Length: 422
Image 1 (cartoon, rainbow, N blue to C red):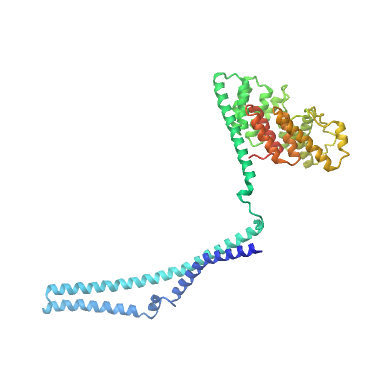
Image 2 (cartoon, rainbow, N blue to C red):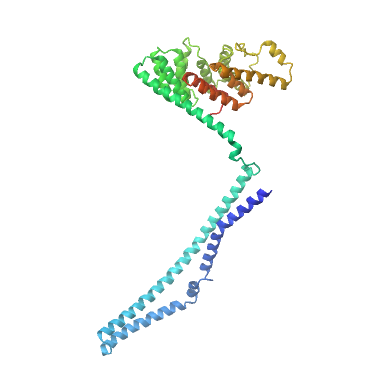
């Protein structure tokens, strides 16, 4: 409650500090316009100063005429008459200036009175702004939220710095790879592997438009190989913010007619079907892709997730249609699964964590296992341990820093399973 009292007092003080000069000026100007306070207004009301000035001017004109008559009578010499005339003229000019000043004061009073409504409008806007700020704070503010001093966030800050450093190292490696591959291709433009690596490096750097040029060169020089067509199609999709345009669809159709088994062909053709509104055809294509995939394929979980999401959104029954292959990598046997069904939820969670931790420990000693890293990233995300998934993704960037084609695959996997970018 104390915080609300303090905030309320501060708001009122601020409002008073802003509005007080406006209201004071407005009151003063209104008083001027009504002729109650200023001396100039009172003088204008009774008219005495103007009458006095008019009388003075009349006297000064008579004096000038009198000087002329004195010259004719010989009372004043020429020098004396000139001096007297100058003095009278000076007084006439001074009186004229006083008249003009009174007229200007009256005009300013009129202008000030016209400005009063504008000041009132400005004051209204200020009050509205302050009230709106209070309302917005009441809706979005959290006055009870505890402070987060720097000292209590040391671990978080260090983790962010390490992640940023790892990302900078990865970017440096990829940029160096792009430079080296570009130089190599100048010397040997028929090196298909170099074109592929150049495209993969550019994709990993988030430059799909440039990668399109590299993959298109590989397509042309390979005699339109299906694998390179799939890579080129992916760069077109990524460069178009995930939308499959006519060019990408044509490339995918061409790749489908080759003997390529690249999973990107069927996945993106399914995505094209879904974007055209034919979700049923997309699900059919994705189910066929998943059922024919190795159990350890790093992209399998992403495809299964897409199938389930699309089926749920469209109300399509897919029960019994997904027949995924047995996992050929070390993992739980059928006996282990049967035994797990008899465990309590807490015991099953402990068993799963034990298996995931075992995989993580193995990868620490045997890091050159891209499929293992992919499974670890997916497992962490399934368990809701996004920070651990990010850490695994960052470790992958160091382990496979010299293999751009793997880095771009892991980048795609990270986006697909929902690992946020740093």
